[in-house]
Length: 180
Image (tube, rainbow, N blue to C red; front, side, top):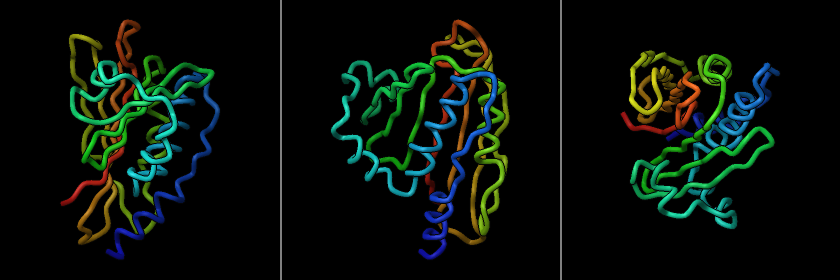
């Protein structure tokens, strides 16, 4: 339990200052991902409560972002576009979707947020692959895991990007607490 409390403290201390890049949607994605998913990862139910007064997507639209699983989806308007935040029911998972965001810049910003874990955690790259998909073309998925020695829980951060101009979603970032 003490190690999980250290995890909570580390997440709360994540630096949300994102360096300016040339692609504003990628910067907006990184800032929203950091402020909503990363910062609230230790207690996603509290985030759900905070978001309760905000308008949700109707169930038929939310289903597209939740892969037909139960949960809630909120539009997150920003001057750079509208992003969609999802919180699946019964999972320690937060996801942010971006229709448009430069894949290379989004990846650099994601790595800046999660590739190096704060002490006492260690960060490990657990996935780095590319895949051809029908809807989004070629996608690139990166996952980093934060853990402490002998800890019962880990944090898993994943980013999938697509470079195709016709992709339905060009960036999908998730943050999850997982049990070993």
